[in-house]
Image (cartoon, rainbow, N blue to C red; front, side):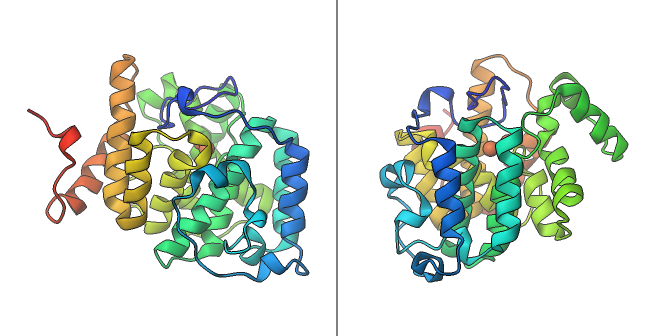
Amino acid sequence: MRELDGNMDSYDTADVGHLKPVKQSVERIADKALSAASPQSPNAQSLNRVPFDDHSQAATTLPSDNPHVSTSASVMSVELRDRIIRWLQRNVPISRLQHILRVEQCSIELAQCHQLDQAQAAQAGLMHDLAKFFKPQRLLQMAQAEGIVLDPVDMANPHLLHAAVGAIVARDEFGIQDEAVLDAIRNHTLGCPGMSALSCVVFLADSLEPGRGDTPELDVLRQSSQQDLYRAVWLTCDESLRYLLSRAQQIHPRMVLTRNWALGLTHKKTPAPAKIQSQ
Ligand SMILES: [Fe+2]
Ligand SMILES: [Fe+2]
């Protein structure tokens, strides 16, 4: 739904029409991202927080351009990040790498906002789409070899498996053993009932990163993501479900379960937004 790279992901929440063209080349983005990871960079030392709502700036500048924003340089080893980005340069298109770098930064900012581990958020954000461009047959084979139980919706839409397979790649290619990080990668597309706050962060960052555009709906979701992770997950699932229903696409049962779980955590303490209340 929100993919432009020829590998449609119906469970990516934001609509293709929301996406903005990005003018920077991936080489420049990757180079700047890598240089920001240098221990000599003053930006790499910054841990100050900034408001999360300046999406127009964030959409056109890199994390390292803003001295007030913590970057992955301050939360992930230079060597690991260098290796992951170079792998991504060989395995995903330019537009996908740009999205991934925005998700990485957005994950860090949300982690800061909710007092979560920024290093875990950065790792999961940077690796969430490792398998995005694997062929359907490869996704199915890897998932089955891992013993993942496949839903009929997975069989009909193998691209949905890129989240689960991405966690396999993170473990096997980059040696990631942190189950919280691997879970956040696994859960970034469909979520999962009971998922951790870290998983919520990456799920939301994937949907709400600045490249998704600036619409009133996205603004509401971004504000919610700063205030209440579970409420934001519920509302983001609702947006995705509305999109799928409007296009007569299959709905994965796990997204419904994620939505019901998140709604259950927020329903009692916060009234539903007027615009999505049923008649
Ligand atoms: Fe994805
Ligand atoms: Fe993504």
